Image (cartoon, rainbow, N blue to C red; front, side):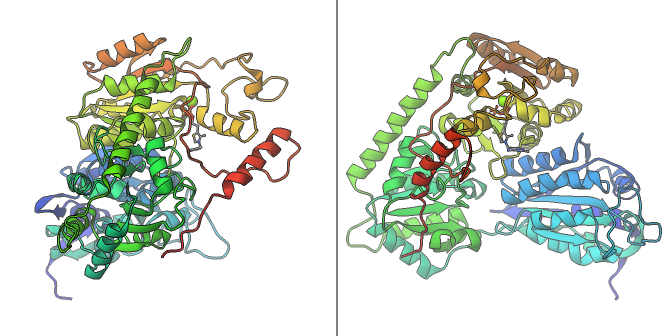
Length: 636
Ligand SMILES: Cc1ncc(C[n+]2csc(CCOP(=O)(O)OP(=O)(O)O)c2C)c(N)n1
Ligand SMILES: [Mg+2]
């Protein structure tokens, strides 16, 4: 080994020294890949990672209140930055580490890069079991950090300081790979973090990772162009990949030239502005009638950057044309191949450009365009849908406002460059249909994992990534109670969030689902037990509410709080918070039962096959009929 060395550094110091020198470059624009490191210290990382971060303050350390939250902050940050920059997250061993597992799954499922550095038990082993150590009778080579394996795209345990030399470059390869990216977990034994090694100096030189725009196979592209030319009723399904690839302008050009209408997934909403005439809005289980009708009869589906979740495909019932076939543009071969599609494995922007060139040239019939009548039909559906949104925005429900009108108010009383963040509850379905996205980063919905608790932490990540924009966090009372801790972090770091807290005393979403399954909202209301059991919806308003004051709770965490009762109060609050200086919470109760309907779609939630409850049996019969519509797509 004759590499010149740096002098001795601890393993933790080497990690920080390495991370601060990692850069990415796409389209000639270069930036550091890490914006710093979030962490919560305990005995498993204070002397290792904690000491290293203290010694190198140029790699900024941020405190969080909860380890799950800090991973969500990193996830939302990188989603807002189109995966070109992220955070590292360090935790202690044991519960601090396992608190990050949910965050790890959220990032991986959403194809978003985060680097997790959980502390781990002593590699030296002589003092085991250490505090918080999981023991096994069968092996000493196991710890709670093995729980990260299925939720990480790369996982390693660093048992000797020099293992970093081969592990960190692999971590960077995965984090910066558009197709492989997700959570990377490097488990760091508490003792090894503090051990010194003479690392080669070259390890810490600036390294720029080029993020490529891969192009698909030429023959596959030509075949795709032929399929599109042969199609009478094509439809584009725009997923998150359109936005991460910054392909939105190219998509617009593609759509305007070809006339192919677009439905948007949860991650893809905002690919086109809401008022673009061929944007049919949300597709699938939470979709618009516009997108769902076109999907039902489409003979060709061009999926771009989508992983086809069950919400997008309406549990495989969305596409009913007997000969429907799929072309999937995706950086990941895995996603490109779904539904036995013709796979165009490549970057969304580069692929759309090449496809458009092929569709424009080399044909006697001239540039490809859909039939004029099909285009007109799509545009008509677009405006019919917009009228439906307007109808819902202008409902004025009494005595408690409806969620639809509150969504409308936030949309209309926020700046057009703002960001709206949400993740779980009844809000995602309503927002997917109703939110009028005015730019590609405006609709920040975490719906790969739909993780309650993401909202406020995620809002902070989005705000850190785009401090010049207003960030609106829309959160239900259930999610708020699950994790509101990062309000404190937002105040500490002076990142102002506007949190819209919608209190309907429990789970509106799962309550409605429960009723649709014949289960009367069982376990979904926040109320005192009656006769020894928690009340369902049959108890109506005749329940004793809990003495919980969420507005006071938010105030106690340092937020500026405005409590509203009516729609008018709510609008006044929205106008007022634009000028507040710190994180502000707008609190309002809204109606548990006033709901936005589904629009010609379905979601498969299996119902008990046998039951002593007649309503459950009735719901099961309906479910069996819908289940018949689910399809396998076997390719053509
Ligand atoms: C961590 C987590 N636990 C459970 C669920 C299942 N779940 C989905 S929505 C929901 C209720 C959300 O309640 P709230 O935030 O008040 O929103 P609402 O449904 O009332 O709009 C639950 C329990 C989830 N998505 N995430
Ligand atoms: Mg609720």
